[in-house]
Image 1 (cartoon, rainbow, N blue to C red):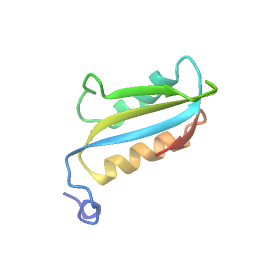
Image 2: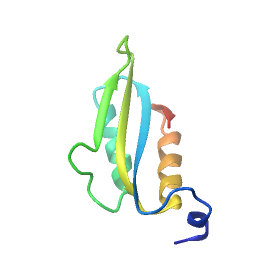
Image 3: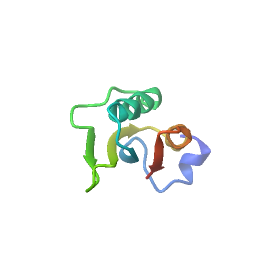
Length: 91
């Protein structure tokens, strides 16, 4: 456990859902999974990725539940997702 983990309200390791939103594109889900896999120590289990369209279909929301091992891991994942041009919001 590192120092930032001690300040966290989360207890690691834990399953942690991350919701990512962007304009609907054919490869949006694959883009999100590709980025998430760079930060995950384990493969994503079946059912770990869910997506839904906005009412108008203009936006897609992808929720990925990852096995988080540290706050640093989550921070790095959020930073990379947030920095990508196709991604509008990360929750």
